[in-house]
Length: 302
Image 1: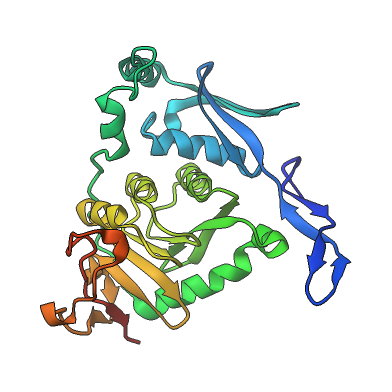
Image 2: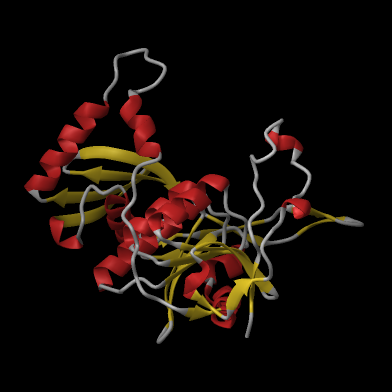
């Protein structure tokens, strides 16, 4: 299976063991080392699905706030090597100087345990506030997540990749990007949306939600993000601070809203949680009873 000249899936013959063992043919996803190179300097090397790589590079630069607009990229190219792929970008001089200063600031002394406190701050960086006045029905969220399955072409062939999709009230599914890495899929989507000047409304994810995905969603400007799995506690805090409506456990029969539920029309708290309703603390939470506080469950209505 090919995309833009690169193989994105390959047939293999594993041994299937059920009641009997037998060889059968299966498509599995490809992954390649992909280097993001900016003005001749390698910023990062990630294992990624070799598809939509121009979108990937642009989305990475945007999500890392190296640039703020595609207009700040003067030239780009994708180069295949024997041992991987380079996505090369040349950015405008003011952005290049800011990147150089940032990289110098992040360099720590040889042998240090941490590369400076700034690197820890960057992990939980302040996010732009998403103020969009958007209202979407609960039934639309459920339908959007259900319909996304039919748009995941690579996952249909391999059952081994994540998807990030942009959905809007007027157009439905606008763009879908897939990758073996959930972060990569979102970077690809962000890059494609920026190139096409698509206004972000609802982000759909086929993965769990970690804080870095909320960071990328906030920088891209999504007011609503919905995922099939549960978010981490840090991601809930980040979404709350960034003004993002965070929907998790989005399935055919409903979902849960963890922050800014006012954007979901027809959803209201079934009732406020009371101390008597508190679940027993998880053994993973240690001795801190409020380490995993209960939140009201919001149920879609209509």
